[in-house]
Amino acid sequence: MPLRVADAARRSGRPVFAVLIEGFADPRNWREWPHEVVRIGAVGRILGALRHAGARQVVLAGRVARPSFLSLRLDGEGVRLLARVGRKAMFGGDDALLTAIVAVLREEGFEPLGAQQIFAALLMEAGCPTRAQPDAEAMEDIRRGIAVARQLGLADAGQGCVVQQGLVLALEAIEGTDAMIARCAALAREGPGGVLVKLVKPAQSRLVDLPVIGPDTIRAAAAAGLRGVAIEARWNNHVGTIVLDRESTISDADAAGLFLLALDPSRILQDEGTTP
Amino acid sequence: MPLRVADAARRSGRPVFAVLIEGFADPRNWREWPHEVVRIGAVGRILGALRHAGARQVVLAGRVARPSFLSLRLDGEGVRLLARVGRKAMFGGDDALLTAIVAVLREEGFEPLGAQQIFAALLMEAGCPTRAQPDAEAMEDIRRGIAVARQLGLADAGQGCVVQQGLVLALEAIEGTDAMIARCAALAREGPGGVLVKLVKPAQSRLVDLPVIGPDTIRAAAAAGLRGVAIEARWNNHVGTIVLDRESTISDADAAGLFLLALDPSRILQDEGTTP
Image (cartoon, rainbow over all chains, first blue to last red; front, side):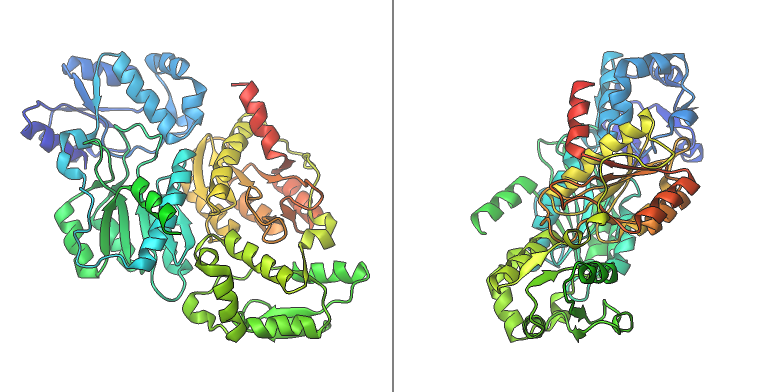
C-alpha cells in the first residue's frame, strides 16, 4: 500500500521522499525511491528528514504496531513531543495517538494528507459491484454489524466485526482483520454464513488509519465461510473504507461467490428505523 | 456451575428438577438428580417437563450456544413461541434472546431466577482480596477497559476485553473469555502486562448470562502474561460478575502474582472525570 501511494503521488506530479520506520517498512522495496530509515522513537530525526527533503505534504501510509513505552527509546524531540501530546494520547485508543501525530505534523508546518487524497481510486462509491448480492438476511446481519462497529468505533477500539444470523461471531481489536476472520471458521453456526463489516470509526482522524480491505480479505472471508463483505462507501470525497487492488478484490469475490457492498452506514441505520 | 446451583438450591430447602439441554449438559453428571433430557427446539416438551415436575421457580444456568435456525427444529409450541417473541429476539444480541426467554417463562407462570439469587456467594463485594494490587498504570488500563466494555455491552455484543498500556489487545464476542485471553499472548507488547476487564452488560437481563470467571480464567490470564483481572462487584444484591470457586480463584491469583479487583464501573468512570 505505501508503494502504491508513492506511485500515485509521483504520477500526480509530486516529488516523493520516503521516511521508512525501522522494523515495519522493508528498505529493499524502496531502492528506487529516495528514502531514509528511522527508528520510530527518533522523532527529531523523522522531522529533520522531512524538513531536509523539503517536504510540505506528509502522507501516513502503512501500519505501524504501537510500540511499548519501553521499546520506544524516544530521542530529545520525542520526549518534548510526548510532553506536548500528553498521556491521554499515549494511553487512549489508536485514534487518539494518530490525531496527536497529525496535529504535531501540522504544528511543525507540514500538511498531513490521507493516502486516499493522493489516490482517489482507493475508495468505492456506494453500490454492490459483485455478481452476488446481499439477501434480506444478510442485510439484517449487516445492520447489526453496523450498530456494533459504531459502538466499537465510539470507544476507539476497533473497526470491524463478523455477524452471522444475528450473532456477533468476532470483534476486531489489534489482531488484524484477517486473523479475526480466520477464527470465525470455528465459531460459525450451520446455515447461511456470516458477513464482515468494516467501517470508518466515527471519531477517527479522517486522514490516517482508514480501514483497509483487499484480495487478502476476500480470501480469508471465503476460507472462513462468510457470504460477503460490507464496507463504508466514499463520502466527503476522501473518507471511506480503502479497497486495495479493487479489480482483483471484485473478481476474487465473484470467483468465490461473495458479495462486496459499499454503503452509507447512517442511511442503513435510518432505514431500519422505518421498517422495524 | 449448574450442579453447584442445584446443590445450593437443595440446601436452601427447594426440591430440584433438572431439564438438561441435549448436547450441552452431560446426563452422566445428573444421575443423582431427577431430570429430563430435551432437545433445545422442543419448547413444548421443555415447558411440559417443568409443569409436570411442579416447578414454580426456574433457574437458567450454564451456557448453551445459540443454535442456527436450521438445526433448531422447533416443535409446535416452539413455532408459536417464535412468532410471539419475533425476529428481533432471534436476530438481536444474546441478551435480546435471553430477555425473551425470561419473559416467556414469566408469561407461562414460572418465576425465573438468576443462579446468583440461589447462590449468593457467587458474587464479590467491591475490593481487591489478592496480595497483588493494581498500580496506577493498571488502573489506567482498567478505566479504558471499562469504557470499552460498556460500549460493547450497549451493542449487546460482548462482556470482556483485554487492555495493555492503553491498547485494546482483544475484544470478546462468542469465542469465550479463555480463548480471547489466549490470543493476547501473541499480541502483547513488551513491558507491564495487560488487564482482563469482565463486566455486566448495561442492558443485560439481570437474571441470566451474567459474566463468569473462575480458576480457569486466572490460569489463562497468567499464561498470557496478564497482570490482573477486574470484574464487576455485587450490586442490587444479585447482579455482578460471577466468580466460580472463589477461594481457588483468589489463591491461584496469589500463586501467579495476579490481582483480582471487584469494582463499581460507574464509580471508576466518575473518578476519571475528576482527575483528567
